[in-house]
Image (cartoon, rainbow, N blue to C red; front, side, top):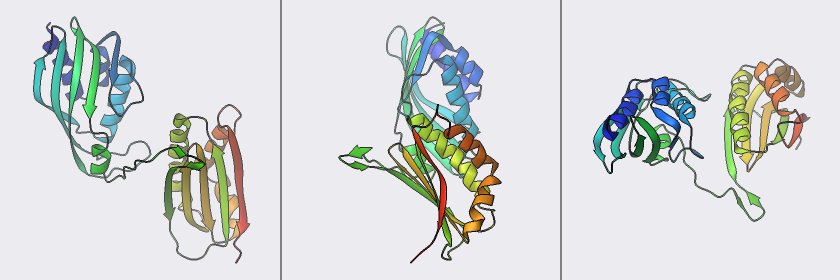
Length: 255
């Protein structure tokens, strides 16, 4: 099998929506990397990465614009990824939007298997097409930490109480996990008696949540009845996870 045939088998596995076949197309020690990843993935990781993308875009398709050998064991592929975000993924609901993402892969082969794939594409294009904001800012500048904020609510009346939770995590992976668990917590809070609004703020690795309530006595029962919140508390208030944490506290509105 020549290099183009080996690369084509790998590409066909993507279009067949077969993560196991994608993983199997890699040689031992083979790697996959693209601009959306912090570092290279092994064969199993590449398969899992593909499965995650396919979960959110079930009709994912790679149209091969051009393919050609650039050496005895190297292949350059220009592709166009298309599909519709018709399924939820990562705790986010489906947008129903279609995407078109051009890109390219440089594939190195070893025999009839793939030794490495290096992908190139605009990492801001896909989230923008899905209606997401792409914010470019420093993580820190002098004494200032930068981050993001998300809010949700169902009432515009003045709150009678505000509850605050502070969590300082140790890694970007923990930031992502807290954010994902937080979405489950908020989804359940939307139906809680007395709930008015939620605000989540991430600055560096410190994460804050603020919830507004009609009355102070609404706060504790709502959090105790929230299974996602209880599970998150068990996970992140353990000594082996977060660097520091402050448990939910509430107070009456004054002024």
